[in-house]
Image (cartoon, rainbow, N blue to C red; front, side):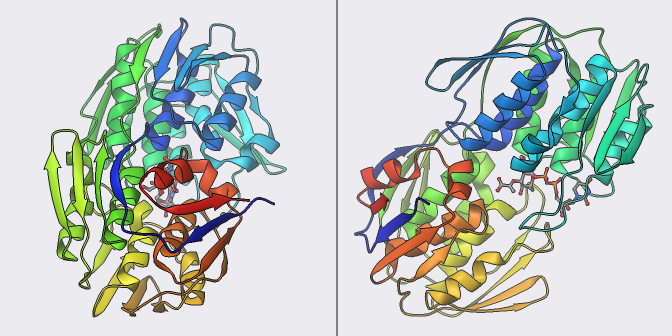
Length: 416
Ligand code: EPU
């Protein structure tokens, strides 16, 4: 199995361009099942998860063509299947996002139940609650889940938690439902706004995306269109931390700075200089990193997807930092790996207490999930010796060309 090797690197310097957002591109690809004409998506990141979603769409009868780097053309005029195979579902949980579009477009959908995963049990009850409220019948048997409806009718849906995936799935199901759907306590993530603006380009009528109340007026059908995916705020945050932790000076380009406010604020609290300039942000690291605390929350709070990378940084901050993870119940898998590299971290329920150490040292480590993998790459940049990271398929699921991009900034990182 391939591994990533990271040697102690000099302070990173230069410019890096951020790719399109994975977590925008995935639901938007799923939503492409709703269009009856050609759809062109631009700035799609080159990732394993995107490949899997394209495979899911193809398996359902959509035509998917890669026109150029980052440009994908989809035609879903001939959807002829409603079953997402176990093999595809088990590769990627986000495959579940085709359920809403299929249910509303062809009246039925079936897939296997997503199991637990490294970062928690991640139930789908809120997605199903939404489908039911729109009039669908749900059946669960033999590990499969199916939903069907002769027609969907708009309704008021309150989400007990502002789940990103549930908001997306329900929004997609509601665009072709009869009448109006209102989602209350909806997720407000930028990726929800991107999905809504894509759907509106295709002819949907969605208002309020980006606030906690989304109103969707059902339309008869959706057409086609061209859409560019927003920049990946988590990839941006990861490179910002890479600059911070190496005492570097990196300009991170193609960012929407309003999407990364908590990351900017927290890096400043550690003593780094962060200079915003239009659609780029420059991060100048410091040798005197100071402890800070973070609490992960739904947007606009601090993103759970940046928690692991910040924990690596906090491991080297002077003083004691506290991380409270409120979004997922089991997202501290990286802690044991960081401890093997010399970090001083204690877990107490959903909190982690990090006492800053003077240095990290290399060790053979495993990426337990995507962001944990990114946290280990960051640790490797500053650890003494050569850090060998295993299970790197997790990293390839969500970072487009991470070694190339880091190498260009001066990092010593290889794959073998
Ligand atoms: N939840 C429920 N019931 C549901 C759905 C979710 O209880 O029906 C709970 C989950 O168990 C979790 C919390 O709600 O504790 C948040 O889950 P959410 O549904 O918001 O997350 P998601 O849609 O499954 C997306 C991203 C994740 C990101 C989260 C939170 C995609 C494809 N994935 O997941 O991204 O962590 O939102 O922001 O958009 C990553 O990129 O590394 C990643 C894991």
